Amino acid sequence: MDFLTPERRAEIRVIAEKQQKTYRQMLVANKNKTFAIHAIRTLHGQIDALVATVERRGDVRFDCKPGCSYCCHFRIEVVAPEVFILARRLSTLPMERLEILTERLRDHVDKAQGVRRENFSLSCPLLEDGRCSAYEDRPSICRKYLSLDVEECKKPGVSAPEDGEVVLKSSALISGTREAYAKTKMPLHVHELGQALLIALTDPSCEQRWYDGEVVFPVIPEAEMPAAS
Image 1 (cartoon, rainbow, N blue to C red):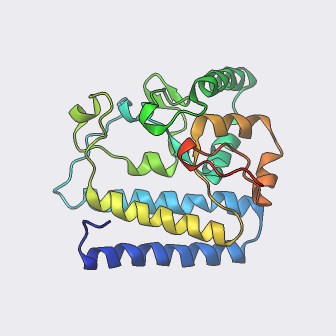
Image 2: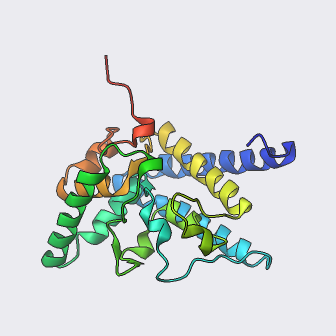
């Protein structure tokens, strides 16, 4: 954030600090696993509201439309509560559909393990016929990543141009949320969606183990934790 004015940096810092305080109060006041998981929906709602506010400015036009899925081939980075929300929803699918999804996830995991962001080029396993099959429960990274020019999205290896206000303020909200969870002994490490989702769908113990403070999903290669000595 070195390119920002001191006033702008202070504004972003206030957003993160307020978010951390608010989220920490919520988590301390509601000490149960289900609340800790679904509390992440507050962040999702905040990002959606931020995007709507920016759109109303009139000088911004997001190029994202139904059926556009260029960004769904980047690495989708998630935190544990987002994975559990998706897993809870997907586990209600008819058995045949769930088995198909599970096999698709296994194939995805074989290709995604250890791949860094700059080398990642796999379809999101939740993408079906060019559309997100779990759109209502999509993670924060999908909610905040909105392109101003779809033509740029079509170019291999090129990140879409984004609105600065959405990028900065949503990042501050996410940072404050992660700090709050960490302070309540539930660190929000960053995971690749497909690998984490397969574990969540096939290991019923992982929710409780996460709530107890364990890191239950592989962290992204750029943030791998050192082995215990």
